[in-house]
Length: 282
DNA sequence: CCGTTCCTGGAT
DNA sequence: ATCCAGGAACGG
Image (cartoon, rainbow, N blue to C red):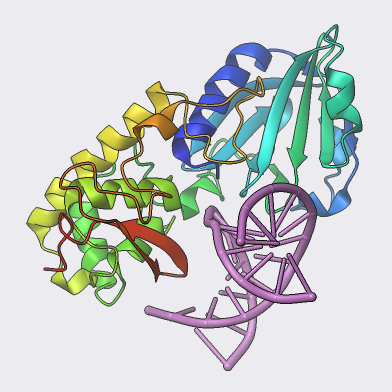
């Protein structure tokens, strides 16, 4: 489940490797993962265009190509972006893999979009340098950005008083970047249960929550993200943050703080793990 | 605001 | 053979 730390790990690697290069060929093997916004755009327009930069907001990547062509990439649950030198023979295996849906040929570098479950997608659109990005602007502040602040979050808490805390943290229009792994980790460190309604959450709670979110996410970025199941970085290697998880995926095991047995519960439609002793309902 | 849908592979 | 994993979008 690529969340902010996994997507950022991929972004920084690919930005260093690919920005400045020209996409000589673009091969789309599955049309249904490729969404085209305007009628006058088509996938082949990526060919011959220079990639200017790769940016990110939350879990969304944006590839900015020359002459205002934008490509949003979301990895869903099992999406991978895999980078290979063309001389690397291992690229053949990925090339022929049945879940490889798109291939960028940057000359000496190849980039594969591979996604078993196909919850991921790409979206081609026209970038307007004068207007705010139509996809990024729908998202709440990135969890690592300074515009994630107490006043903003408090105002959203008031608007979403009936939402459960876990659903609040997972909502990408409120904060962008958190998925199921990091919400469970943040809630554990904050000592709060996932099912608490937002009207029970104080401004003080939010003030405590913000630095916890930032530190958990920052640490996970430093460790190259979490490889719980499917996640691999652009070099097809695992991250390390699974070694630092306190609760996610550990129902039935003991709490690292107090030793109580960790509980599993379904909250906001997601499996959630928490410590019944350290995490309070308020 | 919550539940359902999409999708495939791995576990039971 | 059945269930489970879940990000985002949609409908009730």
